[in-house]
Image 1 (cartoon, rainbow over the protein chains, first blue to last red):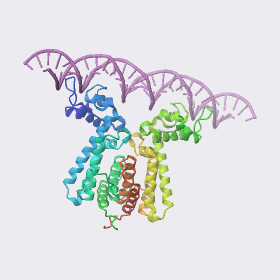
Image 2: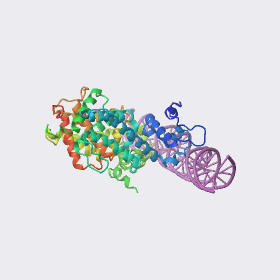
Image 3: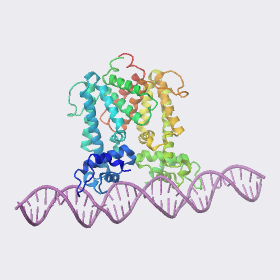
Image 4: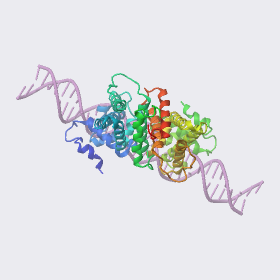
Length: 212
Length: 212
DNA sequence: TGTACATCAGTGAACGCGCGTTCACTGATGTAC
DNA sequence: TGTACATCAGTGAACGCGCGTTCACTGATGTAC
């Protein structure tokens, strides 16, 4: 019955003896992730997060203000984790296969973290102006774009406009992830996803635009 | 202040004088759509739908059982409307351009009906076994697939497995729609969406797979 | 055409629930001297 | 090394809220004869 405490507990983030917690901010983020994964976005509440961190209902306000604040932190952390996964896939793969590997990592992350991935895009529930959130989101996209363009221009410095093949490829992986999560592709064999990722890679490199 | 009643009202679906409503089922579906469009999925409640239809809080139970039942009906109607849009785009367009036109219609529908489109895929909130819902969803996909395959085999009769280019193309439009709705493409010019749809069309016809 | 009656589609008050947030408070921590 | 004190990070009881659902009821409708 208390099984849901395991993750937060095993990370040593439930309040121990003292009056002060020590790392409540992180404990609440982990607790929120736990709730999302177990019960989905519908099942989330600030009180439940406080409960799992072993703390009174008023405590979270000190760190996040309100529920929106906590969820925004969760989303930001989600994008950071996604970025790490994508970066890992990128550096471990020769340039020619990079985009496909990144796409596969994107898909894997989304499927493993369904409800968290979902909330990362639910702007209604987030503080859309939070700089950490925005930065993390851009960083993740950057990894993808860099691999597609196969040059090392640092994109983050100046605003620029990504071109159609990159957007098309991103939309394709993203759509594949969402349709899978939403159960719309239950009848489609796993193998097909691999083929879709190949097509995605080709699109990202302009294989279609350059005269087919 | 009562502005939100307009749609349901102007459709003549608010209870008039009598004890019985006459068409409460449809009135509730319209009211639910209104709420979703105005307040998003978070703002939806069964009581509010009843309120807008001019009926007591217990009334919806007679027609839908619970909130899930009503939302499922909304989602089913959403897919029916989507299917109509896609069919319209298909029949009004020469075969060569059909997939692109359908993709554009898909995107337009999604953007016009953001929160409703969102809920159509939120299986947590729906009765996933509802036959009307399932049928409407399949019918919409069928229009897309038929155009991509450019033959007239009726797909609905026997279960079959769509192949990678069709799934890839669908994922691409779907992803484009969701990323746009979620504000992730705010910096991308509208023109780019048109180019993405062209790429989508090429992919759906196997332009990439057939040796590039 | 009239009457009895079953069925249907509503009412509206009441219930218990968990939520987010507030607030006066208090225990722990860290810093100045 | 010791003491005073400000600041910080918690408590926990209380608030009001809107929700979904229930239930005994009642008015309207339609059908049988």
